[in-house]
Length: 156
Image 1 (cartoon, one colour):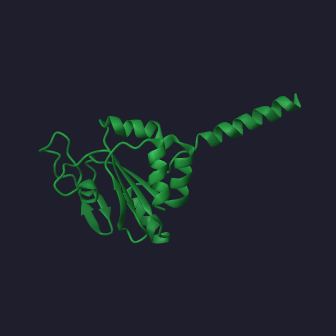
Image 2 (cartoon, helix red, strand yellow; image 1 turned 180 degrees about the vertical axis):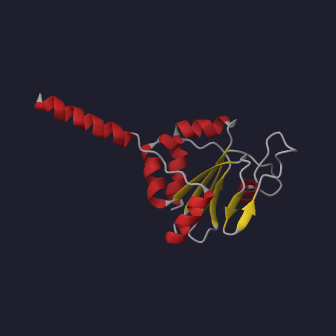
Image 3 (cartoon, helix red, strand yellow; image 1 turned 60 degrees about the horizontal axis):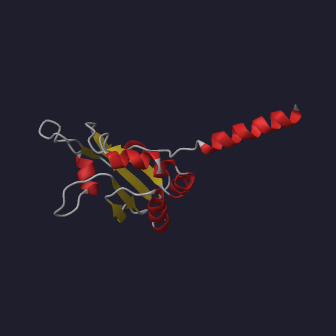
């Protein structure tokens, strides 16, 4: 009976550990954290209709090594690129101006951080910023778990 209890306890603890998740921040939380301690920032832009975003959510962002590396080395922020929320960050106000005019309206902040010269805005988009909030890497494609680990390990 004692062994059964210990085995159950180990199984319970192990299953809780396996369920670790990324602590995704929003821009308000990010601003608060950055004022407490500087740290590189990982920003992930997605949309509800984006098949590749959903696939990364199910695979790469559920991987324990990805979760651990992001948690230890970055502030991780996740934003729906089509949100209609007004976002205030560092005394600047950002809105989604395209809500009335576009089928898939892209928020100002997503366009500001994840646009490329002479190319259409695409998702998924991942932006990595250093401690000074300068871009150190940008990816505009689906990343497998292995490619995600590669990206975040070389960008630390």
